[in-house]
Amino acid sequence: SLLGSITSVSSSSSPEKAEVPETSTSTTMQSSSSFSGNTQDENETSLTDLFDKILTSTPRLLAIANLLLVLTYLLHTAVADLFLGPVTVPTTSSSANVTPAPRGTSRGATTHIANPDNDLDQTNQNQIHQDQTRRQRRMGRERLAGYLLFKLLLVSSVIQPDTLDLLILSSWYTLLSFLRSLGSMAGSSINTAVQSGRSPQAGALRLLLVVLLCDFSAACVCLVLFRSAGWSMLVLLTCDCVLMGVDGTTHAARYAGAWLEEGYRV
Image (cartoon, rainbow, N blue to C red; front, top):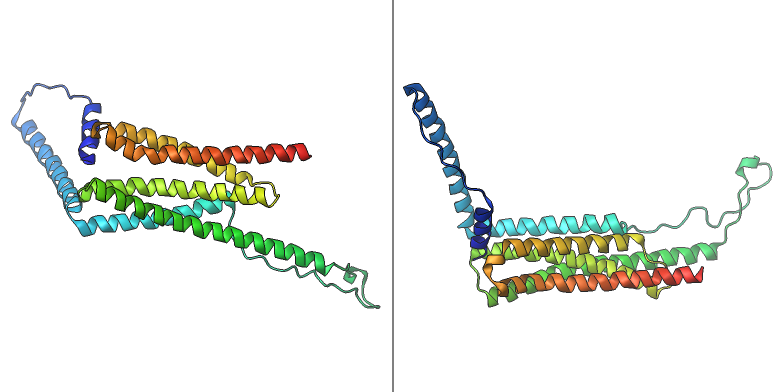
């Protein structure tokens, strides 16, 4: 199982403790050492029992999985707003349709006349851009949930894991769906900007680089933890990392092409 492979890796990496010969100097020292040893054993036993109760209870594992999904959704929204900017509703400027001040007023009250057609066009462009951004965010969240559900159904039907292995697989594919959704959102932002003739956001490229770095790190950690599970399991878990890396590299190359084209125009 996956938990057994993780346990074997941790046990093989931990150094062996050297045996210390036991010496008894007095009855007081023996009683104090036995009391501290019993207290430590009781604490370890209570933690082990609590961990076993959590792992052997399906409702508790489902609650943990739901908590992971909620935290992933909140983190997904925060990261998207950090790199790609928050989605705001544009408002019309109050300086539009300004008329000149009548006679008899002070000089400070004199204002200029704004062109309402230009303000209306700018407002429409901002509204269209905000609608596209909002649509991309919604599609990214839907892609996150759909990819995670598809992978869990596929893996559960092929591997048929137990409850604990299913929790490990759900945590792994939650991470991959999180990274894949952010990468697709950054790529969609770059493609939309290129097709509309605008320069892509620098935050989209930064988000792609962060996604690629996390993808490579996740693949390395998976190879280290689950190497004893067999090559078939490793290929199953890391094939999505390879595909995600190819997609992210393609989007980054498109950003570089748009940046070079904009440089030639200038």
